[in-house]
Length: 345
Image (tube, rainbow, N blue to C red):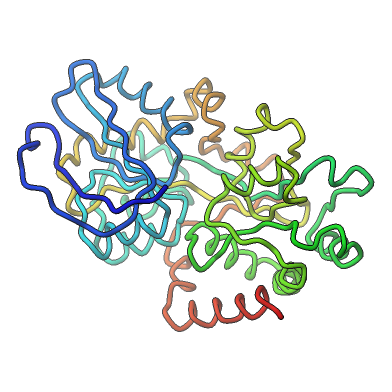
């Protein structure tokens, strides 16, 4: 359930007047520390059940830091920081392009430490954006729905499968509504760069009355229930985290290419606790040394060697190239073409 967020500066400033803002959030959870004296305010796209093990481990190392964890969509994170000047100490998002725009337009602080220096060049930008996970965009399928079909290995295979079996897939395909999902828009624009087949696939899904979603969680739920036969461009870490819960769920990583999204963190320009935010960034970029947290969260840490094991992996690189599809006219044209393809009569 989404609701408007009324920002309250916590900790010693708890008696400060409320400042009302209009961006929508999904939840806000306070995590008290053992001897909490400072409250680190985080706005994030990661679900609480995914991020809570990280928060718990961080507070074990930093028992004086409370955490206020606000969950919002990537577009609402952008709106909070960029449009409304909401005060947060850390912004975590799966939409790399929106994070890049925040930094490019002066909404992020510079930060450097021994920990951030260990990141590969493709996982850090201008000492302002720091990647801490590498998460593939995958397709998920319902095993019963594919009992008599071979799962596709490439996007061309998927196009052929959908065209040959319209009665099976009509109304049973899920994907992002890229008009409202920042991560969905990122994946879609990267698809259009990587493959000439993207627009044909979109047209086929449109003709089959694909259902559109704001996030991966609902797509995973509907595939697991059998309502959907498949969902395209789901965040792989979320799917992995639900496999034990949903035994009929299967994950498909295409062999033609796999977009790999980097979940990133930045310190907003108006952060009130940048030192503590830096401690969290150091903790996040060091997740590759905490394998127990990967097991608990299903968030794969930054690991260049692991990427090299899959020749189809295409890490989405941080940098100004991500701003291309955020240009107002280019975005308008992309969305116009997407709507035309997806919402056919």
